[in-house]
Image 1 (cartoon, rainbow, N blue to C red):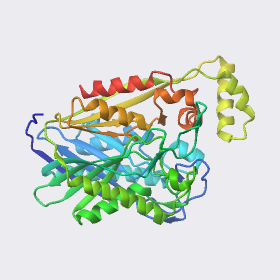
Image 2 (cartoon, helix red, strand yellow):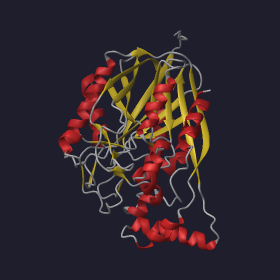
Image 3 (cartoon, rainbow, N blue to C red):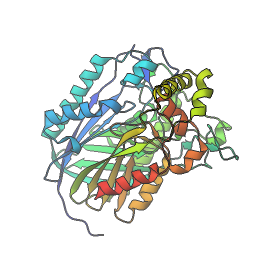
Image 4 (cartoon, helix red, strand yellow):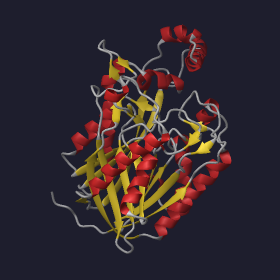
Length: 433
């Protein structure tokens, strides 16, 4: 494969975005008490990269994600830096021990700290400005390795359905991918690394922290030295969770903070190993967006009736919402906007950013299919305006949390319609040009 020689310039800034103790935490619907402590501080990294032309800005933050703040964050970064919004990529590590930031979080967990949110969006924009001003010649390398603690949480029940349990009989993805940005002027290094697994190791504790990705960042920094920064780009881990089927006896358990640190160390060590067999990344930068509309399946009128008396509050709320909608005339919204964003470095590397909690088979399929065109590929979920869980078509008949329950929590009429997977895959190829 012939590479087009390019000279990259890059820089980055990492800022502390830890919310105050006493804030409400997002990620677990049953957790309604405020945070009482910090087990690890939270960070955001803004990286600015160019090949002599217009730069691209990539942000990783230790939140659930940007969700409905995506366009406002892009607006502020664009206004401060002059970089077009379509060249700004926003990702969340998806820690479930970070602050409530969405309107939905406020309804479920407790008050959103609007002052903290506003201040943090401004500080991210300022960090992007600083990084842009400090760009210098930078080499890029890409490496891969293996880490084995992720397990599917959709265990086949032998009857065509699924159980919420750790399973290696269902698809899973143990690949670790890492992009190393290495500045020539001062030896500083930024490591952007990727693994497909939900950061839900501890369960709904009342402590602020970054879960295993945060500890993995610490491990990478310790391995390479004080001039290194690290940021996590979560993969297609919507249906994946830390858990060992052999050890856990068929059920997920809650890890202690020290055990979570150990998981992070395992991932960080895999990233460090990836550096030893990295490949040069070269070729011109190309950034693109594709917007598409996904659709929900039609409303299940029987479920509306049956769930009116459910002991689960979110199921009752869903049933009441659609009972009202059907009485009014049966008109309800079933379209969901979805963004695909891609970042290419010639034909050496393609990074795909998907705006959902993508189930693991998206990452497996896209890496396999992109091999015909690119030397390497990294598939990132939890990016930009996250729409919730996105199963592949094969999983829709199985049901389960990622297929049905989460959509009801979001007051959507039903699961994604069949054909959603192909729509998204086609949009990725369209974005890649």
